[in-house]
Length: 364
Image (tube, rainbow, N blue to C red):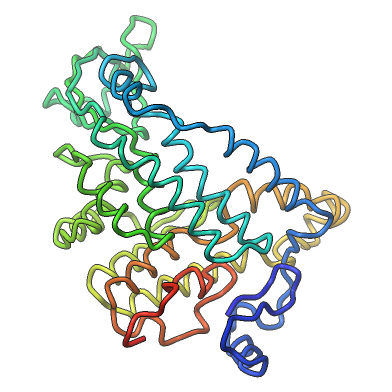
């Protein structure tokens, strides 16, 4: 069951209208609340047109050319970045916007699967060789790099060596373990899971060379998904134990309960993660979050605030929870008992039709 963004009930095949109302009434996050209408004024259609144009303009490079670029290129190419990778990343937003604008679950999955299958052959072509560089390291971080090596982490910002960085820094020669295309890998695996294309997801995870020791937030994000898709549960739980319980305020939460629930085959943990995500999304989407006295005095009207609100919801990927859809789909694929026992947890942000296989597995 989902609710359309215009406020009307959107039927799921096989359910009667009475069942819809019973489910909505039993779902505390949505009953009796007013939510932002993305479709009003044609804003969603305009955004979708721009996304489509950008997405279709990302033409996949020949694999032979990428192999040379990855091995002998410089900068972005050497680190595994390509238009194929960009398509895999962009497919998440394009597919979500298509679905919110009225597209089907089949179209949602087709967009994701097509982009991910274009990216998958590049994983074996990446350059995983170590490289050396001299950087300026602060005294507070010097201990972290005292072994003289580091994992390549896109969240780790290192300053170029020089004499103008200040007395609190010292130059250090590091051997960096190359970990290419971290963001592309992360989003490609999530996209493949959302598409129920687990064959491609497992191929991507299997072909990628994960450098140890695994350190750094972004490397851990990739490692968690890789180990989970490879079926290396113990290693995945080890990575998960290092994840902090705090989540960014401006971006959708990637609740660790969902991943842990799938890994431990514990439906209660999965449900707890879904409930937390629905609560957070409900706050972002609720009109009353923005229609406060202080905000109205500052901006005048809801109409004046709406462009910024829509930019936040769309630009920060609050349309649907790809993280929840991916892990619930993996739970369904692995037949974790009880995952689909509470239909009330499936909302417009975690749609039932995006989490279940086209042909429902036996036992659910």
